Image (tube, rainbow, N blue to C red; front, side):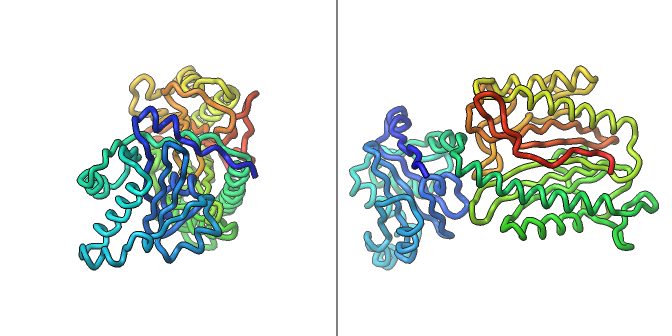
Length: 389
């Protein structure tokens, strides 16, 4: 595996800083990307203007960090007398901040660039200790937007899990019976909770998990992130949006399908066909060198030409969100596919997910995830699109 260049020297020069410092834990995508290490408790990563990288962790994690992390310079809390500092200061947070301060002093750091979400407690402590703290846009977010081959494979793995879960959910809905305007499974009302359970079990078989999976039916689908608790209706759109993450590989995938069990109204059929056509147009335009806004505007053009509203013209119903977003260690990351001036680059993994949402009618959304290439894109989503089951 080719090691990427993690140098952020240019970002430090632009900020007028001599060191970049960030803290994080198992939930921090940036710190995992930079270190390839995870821990439940906060730990620290720093990089100096000379390119030296340091991982600062608890003594308990030292052995594991040596095995797992890509960082060769590892310092621990015990190197800076953490236990003694706790006794002295009678506060674990103050003791930890003091250790960070000593680490920075040891590295000759004075002007510290930190990400926007850097803890204010540490910032205040370090400022009082004589350091200059400068919040900057994370230099790692841009790096993360350009996926290496092994990262693409990790995304594909999560996507395969998502597709198996989507298939299981759709088959459950397809096999449901219609009775009194509702769907039934094995004699019981088919609920949003039941569909979620089937999705979760399918993902677990792949070592994946998903939080806030969307199962939305009927009127709830008019809200892009609406969810349905209780029975699912027949003849109503059901939006299934699954964004699984591999527990081991840590990368996300993302996909959405809209299905309907029973008879669909002509209005809903027309909405579905419009969203499908808009998505196909967006996918057609994706390639390196293209403005993300051009893809978004083309999607809006298709929908508007078919008589639907878009938020480009200030509408509060219709297509009321951006066309897509980057996917990787976070479910939403760079680059965004909307009204921004971002230029798509080979190695971006993005979604193309137009939708239409009208209160009193319902919503339709279709989402595929693609890898941007020099000459187009590779669609990483293989599951068919079929509205009426």
